[in-house]
Length: 321
Ligand code: ADP
Ligand code: TRP
Image 1 (cartoon, rainbow, N blue to C red):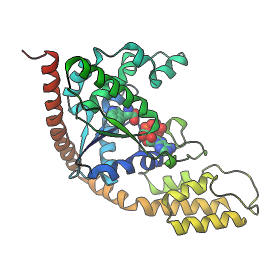
Image 2: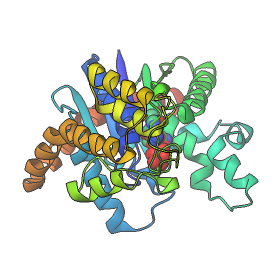
Image 3: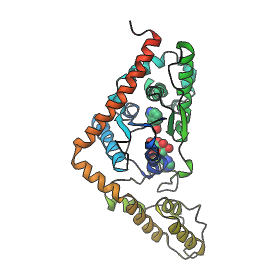
Image 4: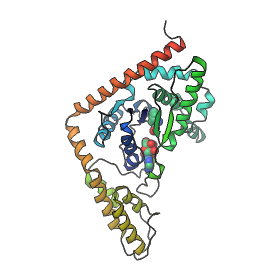
């Protein structure tokens, strides 16, 4: 079984990214073959600043490794290091109906809001299809928002296979656990678009400060509260053991507690949870050649696989003499 997923380097990773995606990628890295890449070509549709993109790409790799992505188990690479993907994208673009892409949400939402979209955003799902089909991926772990794109990759693969003969493996989406929807500092879904994130890495003091500023309701302290619906309780639950969680639930139901104490608990529990990763990151950061070496080795493995698939495609389409 071959597992593949990509993550865009469009900002520092936050708790939502970790519990909603990264942790689950790491759990899946024991598959026969796991490919994880940093989707810098996709990020180019939103980040148009060379230094920033370079920095975020490097940091994304550093973060993933510090969080437990093991380069001996999974190939970690940068999307643009595999030039075959761009050729495959073009080949797939021919034969992709415009209507299929018009229905894709990223483009559709922009268009509905009257924001002008470029061809990169419009054809984004085809690049993603190339990412997936280019490595004969069987399983693609993604969040709900990306499921539509896996369907597009399947449609493109089916139509290509029908036309040119069996070339591509049909991929399947593996929906990441959506119960792990992490609330942000305003209680809404944590997302960098809402400016309500708490980052995994950074100055411990700055992280604590953000935690202490999480919005709370104004009900009096004495009033008993239902834990499950409270975002502070939900955040604490991400880091706490079952018994710690039960203990806090009891405190909520009894009433007479302050939200400030819960925030302190979150700060402590999250720091304990990520402390090893913080340490690993600090060590790896001292030796930037380590990360570069991992990415180079990952790209070599991924490129060999992609070359094999592209050879098959070139042959099927008549692009070789
Ligand atoms: P953002 O919303 O901050 O822009 P992305 O869209 O880049 O984050 O998300 C990357 C991955 O992280 C996706 O697979 C998504 O499912 C997951 N993710 C992001 N935010 C959350 C959240 N608040 N809860 C659960 N998963 C999340
Ligand atoms: N579009 C994905 C996202 O924004 C990232 C991505 C690019 C991806 N190529 C992929 C995910 C291939 C899975 C498979 O989250």
